Length: 342
Image 1 (cartoon, rainbow, N blue to C red):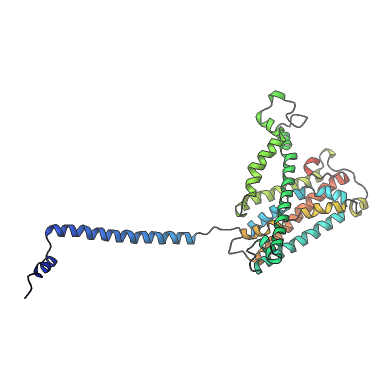
Image 2: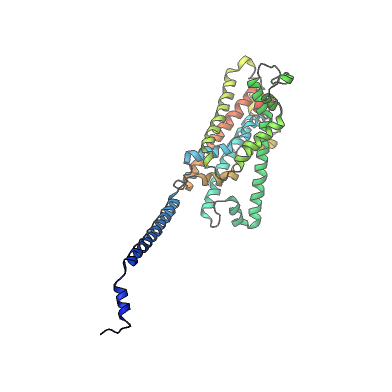
């Protein structure tokens, strides 16, 4: 027999009014909806997390890295080789160029092999110096790379200042005998005035093109541009060779000395030209950037050796071709800037 006090409780637990039934259904639905929402949110988060984990930024192929690295080697150094050969001697200069090319290849491979096999190097020239010699080694590498990069940029800016404005003026306003629009006076257009303002033009090109390229931390995106740059240097080589062969109006090929004087004589300027020969190949400061630009699937020491081999071969061939044909055109009268010679 149930007690009077327990009967109402049992009855209320077993029987609910219609109002209570209607209130219970939305509550259950809300709970179910919340559970579904949490489940969907969790699935969305898992899907988002999976999406981020599978993202892969492709690196360069061996060919792309080769063009990238070749572009970092040839440049202002190749432009001045003709003048260096003229003050050094033909055969002696060729031997120096080949010698420095071979040793550059060996040093590049050695740097990558040491970096990969050394704990704590972290694919960095600076960290490799730190592991070897501590803080002093790291500072030595940083200072050397900074000074060399600064010198390279100064050389490029000088080349741009000396040739870009005057070259465009000659191409666009070639009807003027003085090579520019200086004789037009007030009739000169704003673009023509800009080309005549070499300092302003150099500043615009330096801040608008050179500076953004220097701020990039990864060379992968430059692979397509590097192909264009390398082929532009090859085009310059072809033009120099064609001018030597065709010799338009007899103004390109000049008379030189004897065979001994032109080729076998070792001239006093050899020692001072060693810097130009070395400058043609110095690229150790970008070797880790080029190696890291390789896609992870092909980033091995063996593939890097292919990149360095092809890059050095292309750079040596282009540099020797430019330097020798400019030298054979003007002999001892060859200047250090080929754009000023022709």
